Amino acid sequence: MKIMIMDGQGGGVGRSLVEELHLRNPEYELIAVGTNAAATSNMMKGGTALGATGENAVIYNSSRVDAIVGPIGIVVANAMMGEITPKMAEAVASSNAQILLIPVSRCHVQVMGVESKKLGDYIKEAVDKL
Image 1 (cartoon, helix red, strand yellow):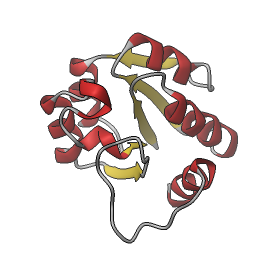
Image 2 (image 1 turned 45 degrees about the vertical axis):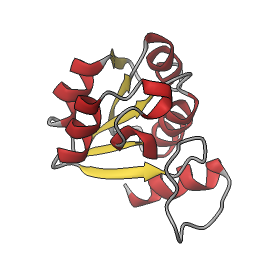
Image 3 (image 1 turned 45 degrees about the horizontal axis):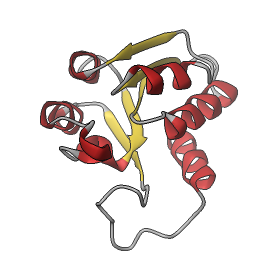
Image 4 (image 1 turned 30 degrees about the vertical axis):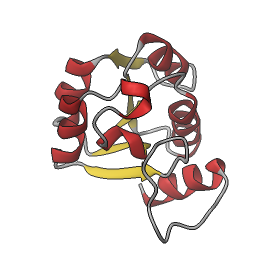
C-alpha cells in the first residue's frame, strides 16, 4: 500500500502519523508531503525516506497513492495560515485515494458530532483503518 502523509507548518501531526504507520506497518510505502520544507523534514524523521514539498508535490502524489492521511485542513483552501493553496485542497479532495482526516481544533473547521479525543488516539484510529 502506498500512503501519502500530508502536513504543513511544523509537520508534527504528519510526523506522528509516519511514526505510527512505520511502527505498525513497515511494509507500507510512505511518502511525506509537506507544504513547506520544515514540515517535510520533520515527517521524514518519523521513519520514511521519501519526501516532497510544495503545491506540485501535493498535486502529483495525490493521484498516485492508495491513501492520503493528514489533518483536516489539507482539504480546506487557505487553511494552516494560508499554507494550503486552493489547488492543494482540490487535488486531495478530488483524489481517488482513501482519505483519512485527523480533526485538529487549530483549523478553522470543526466537524459536528466528532468525539473530542487526544491527537494520539485519532492517529491510532487512522492507522487502524488503513
